[in-house]
Length: 475
Ligand code: FAD
Image (cartoon, rainbow, N blue to C red; front, side, top):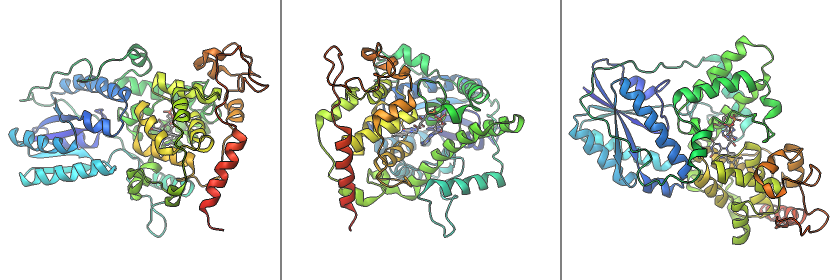
């Protein structure tokens, strides 16, 4: 018997439900497939940094799979439409009896999987879809009357109650199998068609790949920073969050492994409320995947709150370009955008600040910001990114009403009190003291600074935005 496991955002061996199931017959031949679909990824705005990270992880995984006698075959197709017949043909010509993969929740991926299932079934090849990416499967955390939650707090209460009732069990990695009859694809050092860019040495250092590396980061975070997470997580100059998001997005780690590691640590150490706050973040991750499943119109880039699609968003191209480049004249916004452009990652508090700034101060459509983030982020993920953007733009699942508008100067003083983060990414302001650095032109334009004036007046922009939102609601 020949079984195939299609690897997607689950590039690991341990706690891998599809791989585990495919390997449950010790005599079956098991092959891992990976689909390389550059055209589709471009269409989905998948960043080059993310593509590079996945490819490096795939190479690491290929070595571990080879040690278990599992061949890794890469199938290349421009997009999902051309990929499906390729996979069917490959399975046919290699006498595959069954394909195992994890359920995808996004619309295009669901359509792809449905076509694949039809194509394979027509050839007598079975398909097995397993749940993986959420700690609790979408559709299992519902309100009393069986609906998807739209607000986080009651979702979390229900989520925690279910976890208290059923302990999460982790699956072991598969054991060594009989020698494979199929040759693995030889993987080039970088993904085909992906020029390694000037940031590569930095990216290799910041985001090393491998399951072992990911577990090392997880263990280190939990032991060293977990306790302090609650107090430290809002200060980007401190390395106070786990920086595990790229590993979770590509599935080098499962969210279950993160939860179990945190729970185990809590059991053996007192005073771990910080880890409860961290577990809440894992819950946010599940929440947005449940939202995407329950309200699929968000996959089509429609606002979660549909009436907000009537907002008269600005189309000011120069403002958008200044935001992308980190040249807005708001130091915390610029530092954050430059962190994103240089490293592929941005701290959560800063993601909220820059998203709120784009949508509430520049009044630019959240979809443009969402897209730019996907094109740059190493952890780009449709559900978390769309959820975060719509939350910030007040078009989504924020329980607070639209008048939540951050003041970027105050946020700057709060989250970067001595200006250390700004100094790191906006070197032209590095010589300013903590008082001046947040608003360098506060007392009128300082011509000695090679730094732009603020491109908007926050006070005025705030009032305009409030008026636009207010006009949506009938009196
Ligand atoms: P930690 O604080 O250590 O949290 C642990 C894990 O929980 C994260 O790795 C992540 O997987 C998950 N998580 C944390 N916060 C959130 C959240 N608010 N929503 C969903 N999951 C969360 N996260 C992404 O993974 N991909 C995205 O594309 C993404 N886009 C965002 C866009 C905006 C506008 C905003 C406001 C947030 C976005 N986030 C996104 C959520 C969050 O900012 C990142 O997950 C977090 O900064 C990653 O850093 P960390 O791993 O150190 O997080």
